[in-house]
Amino acid sequence: MDLTDEMLIEISYVEISQYRKKVMKSLEGNVKIPTAIARDSGIRTNHISKVLGELKEHELVECINPEVRKGRLYRLTDKGEKVTENLE
Image 1 (spheres, rainbow, N blue to C red):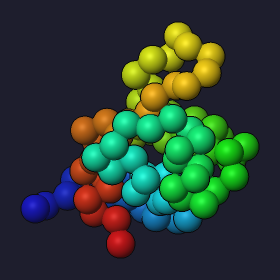
Image 2: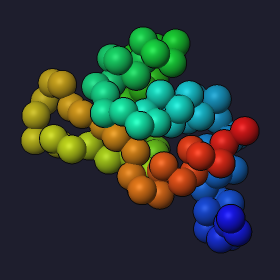
Image 3: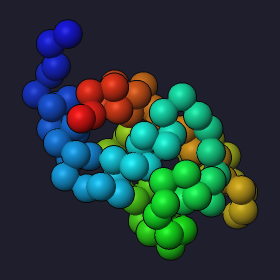
Image 4: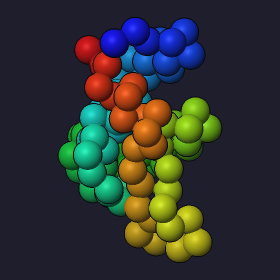
């Protein structure tokens, strides 16, 4: 599969951060709350929200219930799925 320049840029954006990479891998094929992502990836919860914010800006993850304060559910976007498939 040929990857577009945009896709290659997004892949390298995720690759350069272990945190972003672990969060993406944790969400692969799953819908999770931040505490579950933290537990699965071994990253402290206070870092998770920052990383999720960065990934949301890049349209790699989305929150499917942003109106709730607690228990927000996150999943990879289609673009996020493609990036995760191509991570080292």
